[in-house]
Length: 201
Image (cartoon, rainbow, N blue to C red; front, side):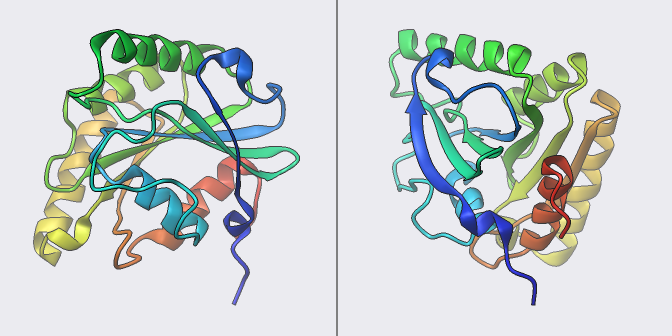
């Protein structure tokens, strides 16, 4: 059994401004998604580390750009969850501008992992992110999380629908079913991230 290179990921820092991020060199992948879509749980499952990304019954815990380093040249970035209503509007506006700027100027960024709930895929934010990534030729891999909440046939139907819609938005988009609790799709996700980070799995 091969070792999991993502298990090396460790918390490095939290950035409120882009200037606080590590030097823009090497390779990094960013995770984006609505605040209740299971983003932290997905990161933990991929990295095989229960407490790496903070999870909570209260959505919206990720309030800065959280950096996890894998080695001296590879990083994972957890972006603030989108759509958390209890966050003040001023802070939400800051996050939106911060994420927008990050996606545009970060040379080391190789792709976005877009987290969406299998029961509510392709919400407005998801479509906006896909459109944005298409505009700047940035690859986007969609994790359709909480797939264990659907039957097998429901999951396959949802996956087919999402694939059809994202292909219409971006030629650099892909999608898969994922469940953090059941570990469904974890290996598939690791392989996709490995391609972006130059890691053979």
